[in-house]
Amino acid sequence: MKGWRTRIGFLVPPGNPTVEPEMAELTPPGVSLHFTRMSASGPAGTHTGQEDRNLSQVESIPACVRLLAMVAPRVIVMAHTATSYTLGQTREARLVAEMEAISGARFVTAFGSVLAALKHLGVRRIAYATPYSAEMTSLGKLHLEKCNVEVVSSGHLANVRNIYEESSERAYGIGRQVDHPDAEAIFLSGVGMPTLEALQPLEQDTGKPVISAASATMWNALRTAGVHHKVQGYGRLLGDDFT
Image (cartoon, rainbow, N blue to C red):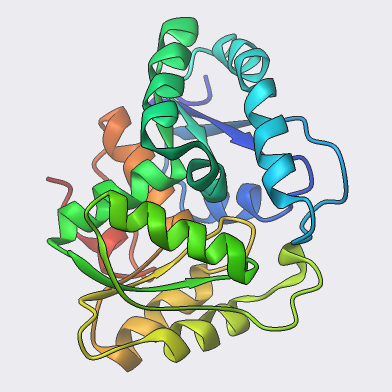
């Protein structure tokens, strides 16, 4: 039987090619991953129309959760950070409660996982980097600050044609760009931008913890499922003891 240790379900934006391979790279033995795609119209991965796509994806989540519930996962993850920026705290909390009632599984979000990771690391002040537009980056910064995370520096990638065409090299570059002496950690937002290869080099070169939406998502999903497994080589968060 696959997933004899636990099964984890993921809700993925329709055009995102990054989540499956990055989550597979972090998967411990005995854990199986199960994916379904949310629905959204319009071009995938572009800055234009991102807010509308976020809202349309939310409408599809209940049907997607019902499908994932058929494989009996212990945890279901909404693997899209910017949707939380669009929803805000109250609407996201309501969504989490409703999806847990529908599925009988724990339901976590990428952004909620980031907040849990920052708390675990004892971090209150961050440098914040995104592959988004300036407007969506500002919305994310505001959302972080409403969640009592101080953003001491922020920035976004220049000349993005499609978020899904970005690379860990570019993620490393924007992480170095936003780093600030007052930041206790660096946060790379967005599960569509590949980040895993950048995490360890960034930590080595800045001397501070670096988390991405992807690393925080898998860390929190495993933690929520009761799987206590260190994943080395992807930064302090995944290599830490699970407490």
